[in-house]
Image 1: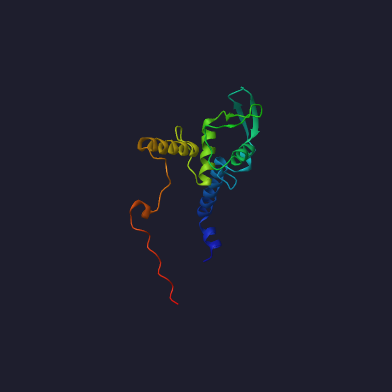
Image 2: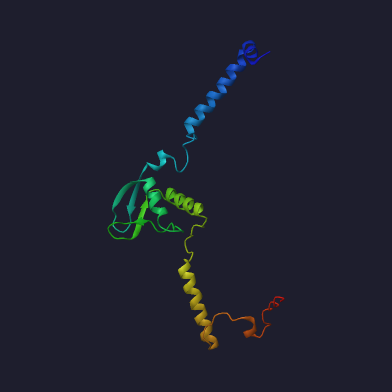
Length: 169
């Protein structure tokens, strides 16, 4: 017995299968979980995002795709405390009205780059380098010796590095 004869003898199986497929199609259409869904879908990238600059109070609207591109052109690590650049003042004070969208976008871009998003209070690499330099200077002032670079073990009284034997002739 073939599939056609089987379905002809039991039509409720065919109708059940059709009903299940209809429910799946309606669900996918309603939730937008088709192949175009996601943070980079054309519909999402063409949405207009309302930006307000905190230093001048000016507002503007730009497509989400352009905002994403502007953030990607900045550098390696994006700081959520720095907004987009105000064209009038040159300061990074522009933020979308939706803080959740902003934080999600910064986290997503940083995650794609393989870096962690800085948290409020985290020090930048420049601040860490400056703190290390200040600590070295403070230690040098306490001991009365100038800060030096690490010396080889022999200069510190340790055993010298093992020498390699001469190659046989």
